[in-house]
Length: 72
Image 1 (spheres, rainbow, N blue to C red):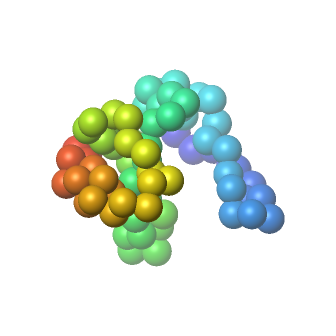
Image 2 (cartoon, one colour):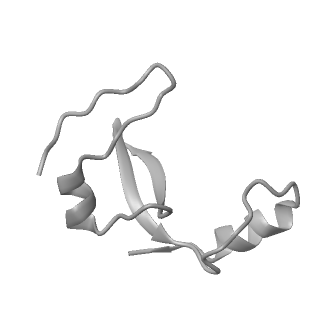
């Protein structure tokens, strides 16, 4: 499946509905972004616990969550 998307001036893009549905990506989900052989790879991840305050300055939460990332 291939779709064409445009990157905004702020670097944002919209995942087409057909791709979100196929991969069961919903509002609030997280995607892991990596570069592999010149390609951008987006992969849905589950972060446990689900509710993490990413805006909190306490990096302990971020380190804890990073250890809990599981790729689907």
